Image (tube, rainbow, N blue to C red; front, side, top):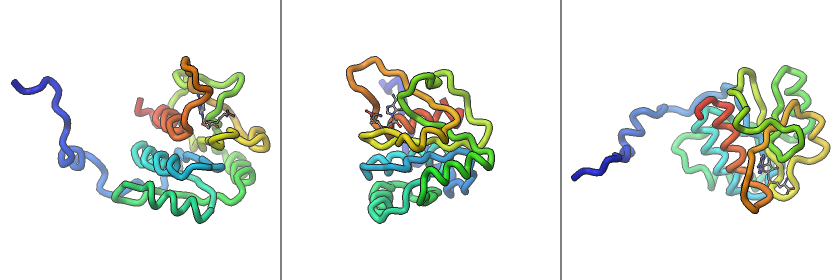
Length: 172
Ligand SMILES: C[S@@+](CC[C@H](N)C(=O)[O-])C[C@H]1O[C@@H](n2cnc3c(N)ncnc32)[C@H](O)[C@@H]1O
């Protein structure tokens, strides 16, 4: 008897995927601007590819190395280098982008209530230990929080970013 559920084989998946990576649509940009662990950047890069987002990271040598190691995709994904996070976010905001923090914060929007992005949106992710730095909080237009019922204080930053990116992309 054949199983009730059939797993889609790789060749079938490849046939329905893009042949080339999306260009810089600039509609959604994941911004882990204060990263500590390279592995999280690799994970976020894969999510960016999956949802059609770009990734914005600081221009550090170790970040480039981490992205190269963590990139298991066949095609390169759009990566922006951001030297001064607060200045870059302020400039984006002045040009009309929505700056959305992903953080555990009072008055935050709950993930389930977050609509798909209708304008260029920068998704700001915090440092793995310290969160989003205080100096960047004033630049945020809004904050989204992912509810938790467990014992841990927070989620892994790549998991949190991926959940929010999927919601903003309208894919879940
Ligand atoms: C490990 S957490 C930072 C720790 C936390 N801010 C603290 O000081 O204990 C790293 C980042 O993941 C994101 N994050 C983790 N869990 C989250 C949640 N439940 N809701 C929203 N963002 C979350 C935030 O961007 C946060 O800055």
